[in-house]
Length: 120
Image 1 (cartoon, rainbow, N blue to C red):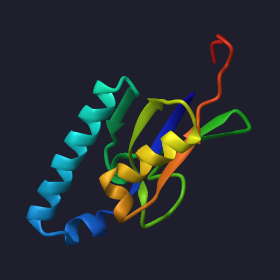
Image 2: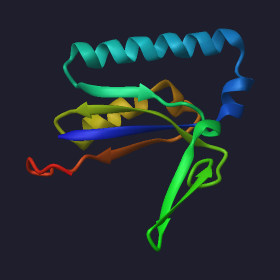
Image 3: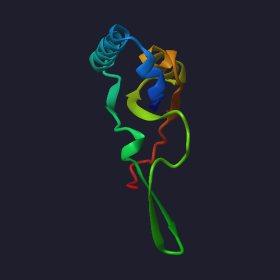
Image 4: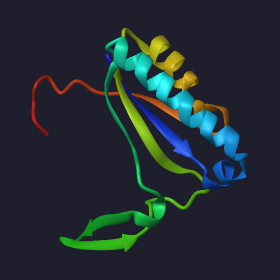
């Protein structure tokens, strides 16, 4: 089953870490990513640009309203994700707990629904 591991981040946490710890976390991400690539569990994933680059679109009465910034005001924002294909929720949660940022912020584990071959 596919799961999306949504990594929420807080820039204040990151900037307060000593440089050596930041570099260590980058290395941990590399090790973690290599392991799930080698195991065949990684489907995809990316680091996302910061909230200062976000544009939110809402359509009301057929008119698009585009505003700067994320949908919700928060100290944390979506910083990246892994799309994985694993045997079940326990393995997805196990992998989420190994994501380095999980020590400081939330990693959301969300099942990806099977659309039965339908295109969206």
